[in-house]
Image (tube, rainbow, N blue to C red; front, side):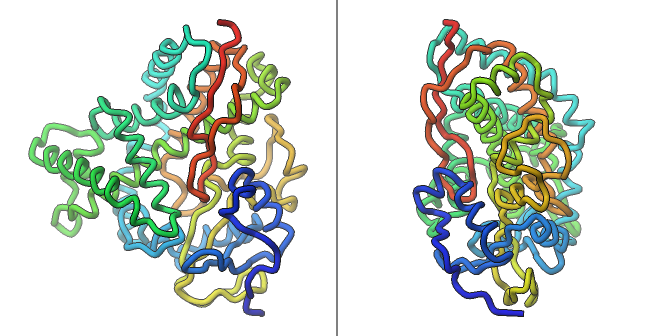
Length: 392
């Protein structure tokens, strides 16, 4: 067993070329050691990139804990990003709204939202897939699940962007003011719902929840809402933009998709494998532990790199080929184990509805350009994706 040294290659997760194309990082990781120390961030962290090792880390929550934050910076445990027994309490509190039977009931409303959004751009030659469809659809539905007013989508967009950026920032302080405004807004709503008592939507249930006989603290309640709110829109938004960007980059793929020659569920799954909206998340070691011959000290951050694990040739044949008909091994893009993404089924349904409406109504869609990547290095998606309706 060896102590890992600084990586000998030029891996730089935040370099311009690797940010523009995360497959560069994935390739370097898979060509190198199974576990490596990454010193280009403070504090330094370790990276596991093989499917087998990522799966192991995600399935050993007692050794690789979430309670110090799932980003590279250490944070206090809160909400579902905590460890048992608190994690169990918080997950049980909110999971009813995210079970398959509850999610399935949202389909008619999702279909109506998708149609309304596409109606609004039907007469425009050029529009932005992110701003006009991929972002407002999941934000609207997560607001309705919570019972949060939907009258200022732009405000929620600023807050969501700030929360996502802060998760993986070297210096999160620049986002504190925007996040503080979001916390104040949510806290006011929580206090109002607690006083009203006649609302059974998710925000009201969180407001009235008791742990050991006491209401949740303001910090616990707000933290839980923000976790679910941001996770409830960011993954779906990037899934939709990544899917459309990837298929429109290949006219044959888009034509096959619009003609119904691709199974939609398989194609979404392949998009999640090939272009995961979240390139990875962090755990913290509860003790010294060995992974792939490398010793990781206790209380050290470990990045489980989904983007690399999903392209591991030991797990997937022809992993660098986008195959919308691919079947086989489970992808890791939503995590595994007790911290598997709570909103996984909701994200897939939202994408299914949006993409099905898009291929039906916009078969002649084309890219104007590649748009703009979202900012944080842990995330992969488009914050801007201009498209053209050729039929107009």
